Length: 332
Length: 235
Image 1 (cartoon, rainbow over the protein chains, first blue to last red):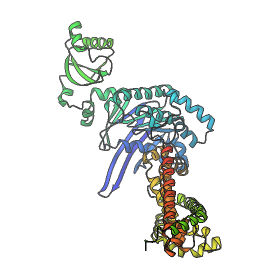
Image 2 (cartoon, rainbow over the protein chains, first blue to last red; image 1 turned 135 degrees about the vertical axis):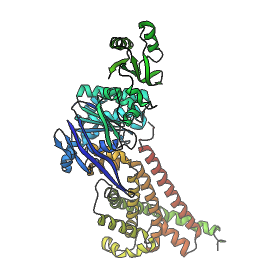
Image 3 (tube, one colour; image 1 turned 180 degrees about the horizontal axis):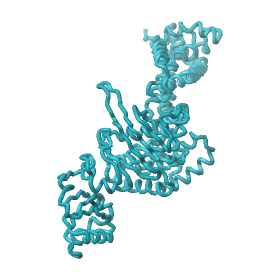
Image 4 (cartoon, one colour; image 1 turned 30 degrees about the vertical axis):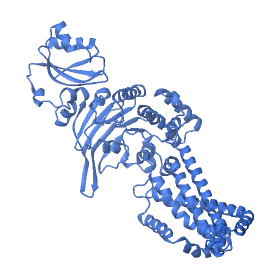
């Protein structure tokens, strides 16, 4: 378990002190995929850098498995960092080393035997789906491939936590999707805790179970992803869930109306008018209260909020959409 | 004064000097340059690493007073004109080599002049390393020494080689200057015949050879730097 307690980070600049984080407290369970989302400058990167002490917090504590890592000496901290792997927006591979040697790097730091490290690196390349790129240099790979190598390198030290700092922000939507799938896969297979820093709601929607919304250095909202999506309470959350902007009244609408949140996750539903089809086939007239969808490479992404007149129909809507692989759930 | 440069007698004399002295001159210049560059690198490389790593934002921050002293010493040595530095280095040359005259003795002032220059070149190479990559290594639990030896230096190899090439060609130019105080090589030949005896033909020949040597060092260095740079998508 990772406990972030009353974390505050202040930077002194020429123009005075700037608070990057103010009194941030979060608890992240073992094996969770936890999203930390916010706009640029919200303090996300500072927060994630405090977790492995690349940034020293001004106040507050970080406990990982009960250990206060801020109190560790230099040597113990380096040891601890091997348990907290990190991947980055710009991949940060060593450009003068082959992929295989990049993956060997953390094992080299830990003093593992060369032959053993090489064997493990080959296994990891297999896991991330690039077994044929062992001797290629990073410059010869695409962004998505470089991030896969970075993930393999992160896994090389058998970490307990994986920090993803805007890991997909430099990638196109399709590549983003495949990298996120890989991260989810690794989370499931290895059971390691994943903390995802992002400004893209899509990322949170795709893989996170819990999310905290950071605005101006403060956590303005946190909870399970479905709760936040269903009823974002803070302005920052609403802005992130529905970037095009909605009337806030949508969320305080007629209480007698049952609401269903529909998530388009890039399945092949974009070309099919499922809501209209449902009206024709089932006779359920759903009221589209809000929608924020976009089509990327022929696939629909986004969410929609439907108003349905009865509880019974709500269940029917969910079942109907499930046939087409569209996720829907009732929300309060 | 240039009217008698291309006389038949001038050609004959030049050819005989070229035959008897130039081979030795080339060798001496080559030897002095390579040995001086080697020692300048041996001293300058660690100093350059210290300048970057010991910075307040570096991987191994050192006391400010120490860093300031280091910077002052390097700037001081770099601001002394080489001609004067050669004379100032006489006592050191005498202590180390036993004499102040000759090819070996000229290595001493060359190294003293070149190592601060090399330290600055190394500093600029190491500062080019992407700080994000260093941060990534820190996040993996790398120690400052590991970051220096396994990240900063290997990542900047192409740039270090380019800068070593600049150093070697500069040192070659300086080595010619040492001909004035008794250093050997093509510089000595050019000065002795061209400046003291007005044998311009021989001076030109020596200068052309110096130019050729610089060209060779430069193109070898550039080619090596390109070949070793894995950021370029060849091969």
